Image (cartoon, rainbow over all chains, first blue to last red):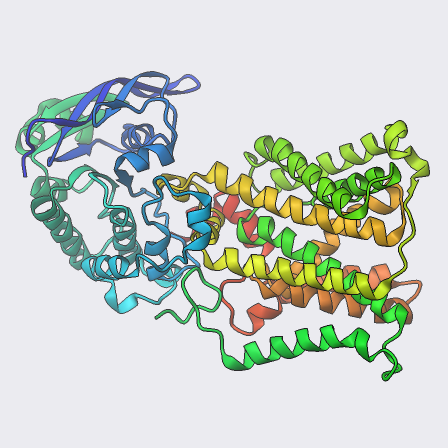
Length: 250
Length: 337
């Protein structure tokens, strides 16, 4: 899908500093409903920091982030999640001692739950949906295995399943193919495609693997030293001299 | 369905375990009634059991914050102390026991909210040490606030000598606390606490309001331990800072929960009962060296059975202190992915 034009996520002059280091500098971007947008750049270019700013794990120093037209700049991560944004992490975050199924159940939608409701309902009410999603991310045979026993690639898939559990509108995937064997990379790509084309999910993907990005994304932003270096289709940015120089040197 | 034993998902408890627990509870209920028939059941023995029931309740409460949520509280005995002093001061001023007990528990709950809000932002050992600090601070306040607390001299409460009734009060309360913990553990609320314990940032990112969940668990644990403190004060008929605010009380709770199994419902029960009776034997056999023996026991637990007794029997929901601290400092995620 190429997006229907309505901005789902928008960053305006987003800036993040760590002491004297400007990790993200004055970055503008927009992700439209139904789009798959890539975010690339050399190591240390600020991609994950920008992700952290968007999902509110890190507060931003300047600028504004809008999600569904709502200013989320001052919101807490769980409030952003309630609005329909989900993410995965560069360093995989799964609940290692819980089984695959339990990981999905705990990742359910928590929006508007009263304490009384949480206490009177056992954590199995969404089991059917959890099982379906586990099958969808090709982990059905590992349903009852503790997440800590899964391989890196399987944990990446599990994390995607967990992100899907609350039925978000936007998924931010941070290096979803990193450290994953080629077969599983194809599975991940296939699942992302299905989610986008058949379920209308919007994606913002951080990735080093340019083939992964060019196979999936219609538009790409390039960061370098925290600044926006280029924007365009995958083919355009791969031919951009500034991008080539940032990756390979002059 | 999952084979997990005490996991957040629904678990089917084996029939033998239900039968064994029913037998234990029935025996405890029947014990005072058999006082005249069985020589072993003496007033002193009943008193020992009331102490054990209170420790079971305290260890279970500690486990709610420490084992379920992953916030290892080294100052949990402060709730016991506030409950004891709240109840004691009011009874000293003419209140009846039941309303004084409720008020003591409410004081402990209010304290939990006030202290929990800033301290629950700290992670791992930093939280543990901060709680120890607040414990010491409260003890000093009690010591110098002589007009209300009696200071170092302490307060005497009206005597209450019906040991059988107290036995049943404490038994009922311990059972209620264990039932509450079991309920919490299988609920969505309990699942959210485990998620926080396993990965707090991930839990927050997935929509769990971690601040509210942590505060709720911390306050519930505080209120319940406040009740234990109030019961203990009434039973003891005398309170002063040195016998109420003892640092080692929290250490005992940690030790008991670790021995039984951190983060499980039955762990604190098994651990508290085991250590209480073992200590009885140890004290009797090693009068001069009992602290050395207890210290050695703690080292053995940490080194050889970090997941406690329930962990030995394959309950994978139990965790260990090093796992909790490692996780809260981000080591677990970084090292094992």
